Amino acid sequence: MKRLIMAAAGTALALLLGGCATTIRSDVTTFHQWPAQIADKSYVFEVPPASEETLEWRSYQELVRGQLARQGFTDAEGATPALSVSMRFMTTVIPVRVLEPVMTPYFYPSSRFGYRGYGRRYWGGWYSPFYDPFWGPYPAYQSSIEEHYRRELQVSIKSARDGKRLFDVTVHNTSRNMSTPDIMPALVQSAFEGFPGPSGVARRVELKQEPKR
Image 1 (cartoon, rainbow, N blue to C red):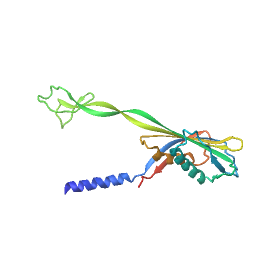
Image 2 (tube, rainbow, N blue to C red):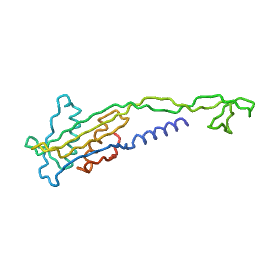
Image 3 (cartoon, helix red, strand yellow):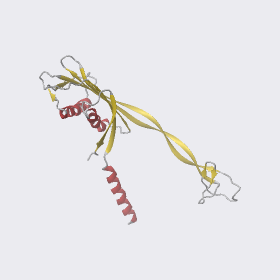
Image 4 (tube, rainbow, N blue to C red):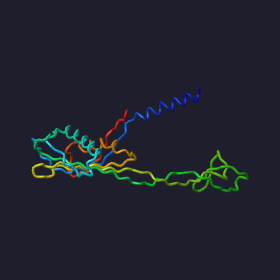
């Protein structure tokens, strides 16, 4: 019965933790010369190089399209556009060395006691009322390599008439989540938070991401 109760409690805790939202933090830098008044906000996406126009790219293009719609932009849909939009993204794997404390035994002789046992040593000496002084944990470290993933998203908006740049935004995010499709919706949303935003200023944007059902 005790095991069943403990298992049920563990399951409930796992469900509770699994339902918690994740905070995605991104560093966003924007440069723009956005007009105070712009009547025509129709746009077309620039065609990327053939090597970059993948199904993944098209999926993220739809995310950008959704954020543009939130800001009042409209797809030109074959008509002459006022604006052109380009998008690039990149994921870089960064190996990070991590040090983890481990406890190894040591021998620490003492003339105070005439028997062997187990003890805990502190800098400048040892003492614990619960342990004997001869043996105890010695602080040491072991290293391992963790893979972190650095993602960069760039979105630019230009005048389709003369090619003048109106809006450039770069979003950076680093996490241990290896799935770019999981992170990209937050990166795209961060790019358009407070559009057009302060020019020439790096800022931190934090978004809550609900777990997938």
